[in-house]
Every structure is written in C-alpha cells, then in structure tokens.
Amino acid sequence: MERFREYMRDRNLPLTHQREAVASAIFYSEEHLSVDDIEAALRGNEVHVGKATVYRTLDLLVRAGLVDEHDFGEGFRRFEPLSARTHHEHLICTSCGKVVEFTSERIERMKALIADEHGFRHHHHRLDIYGVCGDCQEHAVEPSETRRSELGRGSR
Image: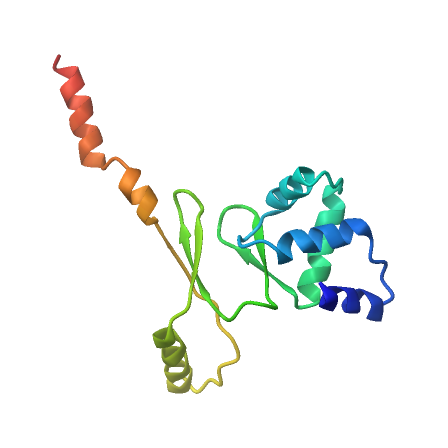
C-alpha cells in the first residue's frame, strides 16, 4: 500500500478513500480478481465505489507496476498484485475459471535456452496453460457415459 501512496504523491494525484479501498482489495487478495470481484468485495465491506473509479484505479495500479492484468480468454480482465509475489505461471480451468499459480525451475531454465537458440536476450515471459482442473474432471460426466445414459432411457 505504501508504494501506491508514494506513486500517487509523486504525481500529485489525489489518494481518495475509494482508491485506497480498491488497491487494498487487490493487494490483500489471494485470487486473480475481476472488476466484479473487486466490487463485490467492496460491497461486502460496505464501501461504495463506482465502477468508473474501480477501472481508473486499476489502470493507475497497472501503470505504477504494482498490479498485473491478465486476459485468460473469459471476456474480462483479472488483476493480481506484483510486489509480494515471485514470478509464476498460470494454469486456467476452461470449465470453472479457476486459476492456479505455479513456478517451475525447468521452465525458467528452458526459457534461457530457447531464447539463446534464437539469438534473443530474454527480458520476460508469460505462460498460461489452459485445461480442465482436477475438480472439474472428477465431477464431469464423460460424453460416452452421457450417451449411454440417453440410450438406456430411450429403451425403457
């Protein structure tokens, strides 16, 4: 929070209660929050912030380098704080939207080898892996079972 306050102060931007509330919602969350998630968290804390203020504050946080934004192909952006977290990758469930963070030394080693192979000096990277999480796999009905069920009902 202090880095956000410094950023605002250095640029002579007003640091309102609403902006601080939006920043706190992100900084103290373990999730990758959408704008709707942030609004719900604020409402739960009885803080009234307009959607435009949420968007403008998120843009400030991203420009300040304090928050990263992600587009996981859901039709909206998600946000996560950068300051306290190390570099990580994402697994995104295409069924329920769950996002799992992970780190991999193998990926870190491979990125340097791949960049070197192609004459690049690595600056940064992002890896998002899309699939179906274990919970969704466990609770999903296989298409063959569904088809068998439909055939079984029809013969009665």
